[in-house]
Length: 112
Image (tube, rainbow, N blue to C red; front, side):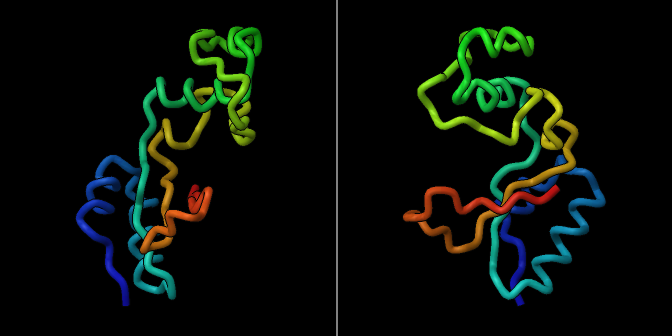
């Protein structure tokens, strides 16, 4: 049986209490160890994510400062409205299988 490490527990401290229960139960029954990488996102991080793959004009239309526009980066397709991420409301976490495979381009598992 696996258990959450101190980093994971620290990353869960500001998360919705029900989601914390789910993550704790998941580690108890999981056949794969995992670590909690990210929890609550700042507005700035939401704007950074929204700007990826979008032009300044697209950012402005959604109320995002054009300085966050990164049209040449891979678009973050799951973000259609910058501040509606469940991470903003503490109702989502990002977990990685552990140990983390550095060769994997996106090992994230989203829980929300």
